[in-house]
Image (cartoon, rainbow, N blue to C red; front, side):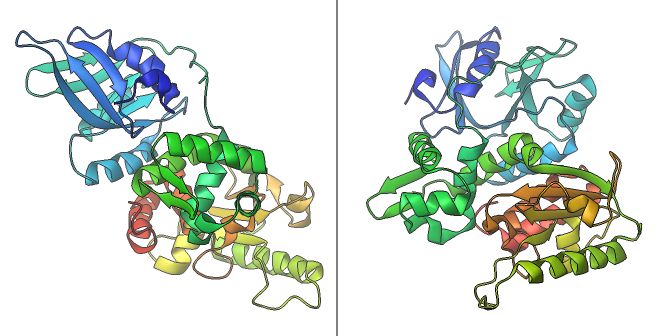
Length: 358
């Protein structure tokens, strides 16, 4: 079993230190798969170990969307997952307890049960400044993981082609592959890349997408002239399609056409599942310039009904039908919305379009 100092999951180090402050824990480390936590316990009959999957988030403020990846991990069986987060407030701690999830944060707040004879619950400690990971892959590296998960063809591509498909540099792709291989998520051979643990890889990508990637891709939130989401989206799609026609070359065939915009979140889920429409819209665009919102007649608003994200690779916009974002992105959008009905749609979407990942 690999020691924590040699693992990719170096971001877990401060949480492991907090775990080792508990009176019944003598040692804590992450297994070689980079996913399971091992706790060595102090006991009168000698030390014993317990294993459970962990989920690490860098989100400073948690919301109820965190239940989605936790539920996915719990569905795989075994011990309940352990959430590691910078800070868990008392209300969130109580809500997690109601959902039967356990956690530890950087301040030492926790709720952990080991077997029938070890239990720790600490609340009321104030948040601490997160410790910066020493060897984190970075959000660009996780774009490589997204490509490997989203498009099976990328797993046999040369490194340069994989990097281009992911929208990153060749050097970033090389480092990311090495780190993901070290963590046991993928295996790199002379024939290409194999997903060793697709479910864990998907969970890892989902958390980084929510915590790091999406905030960097965010163009902003806006208010549309028409408050009705269906009419507003129809108008925006008409304007965006007109721009696409102007950019397209006469030689470009329908088979060669790469979408330059796609709907995500409830906008996409409603079109394909007809489960929940909601008032919000999510739009993903390819390489948009700063004038796009103005050309679309949108007004910036922190409480607006339209959220727009910018991407460097068209892979993000390649969904199950034209102008529907990739299923992974739609799922992430639904989970990040913090809307209970959208979370229901996320569960249905995952069952329908993300087989093997959930």
